[in-house]
Image (cartoon, one colour):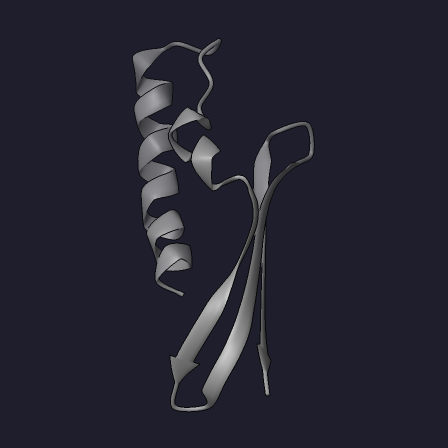
Length: 74
């Protein structure tokens, strides 16, 4: 959840900075490129232990990043 909040806050800042520089040919997604892919891990909390899966991928001709999260509890 913290990563999603981080993206929501960070993404407009990155996009605004890129637009104000006037460099349309630069890759605006470069700062987030390392997040693209599928991630797996574990989680512990009040509901119990879970297996967590996340996926970040480009969609709509690299205009947007699609984020999917799935937590499976025992």
